[in-house]
Image (cartoon, rainbow, N blue to C red):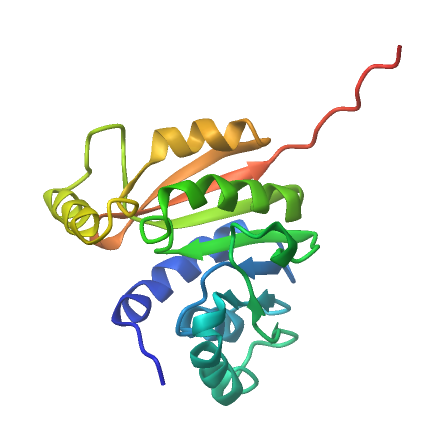
Length: 210
């Protein structure tokens, strides 16, 4: 099976964040589920969790392999992992209807093209319930400042492969998200110089009558 050493290292710290942030029996959409290790780990520890994995078409079969073998055994009471969906964040028609309590994605923002990141934010805003959370895990910079030399090196490496990749600016993400009704409510330090940015979909007030 496809295996991610990064997922294995970060799954427990991410679980701790989700345990603090998610409501009971949360319905969660994961964007870019990769090897499926996060899906399985979270469903084994969060009772009632309904986890919807997703991936690009080219990687769905590898994701399905793990979920077929591990996605129904040892789960927490009432927890379930749905059949993975094909999801390219730039294709609006592929986004599921929701509403979801949370949209979660790990180590995807720096890999997807820069032009796709605003579409990730917009898609999450559409499918989240009012008060729902968007959780972005990975390395982020603040303007031109990296939080660690290793992140600066990683950013340079990514851009040498493809100029459209790179460590994203948390401040710019916050500004883009705000235009979509997503407000940054937490910026949590994580191991290995990573962060979890937590955005909340605001409840929009009714427009005044005229």
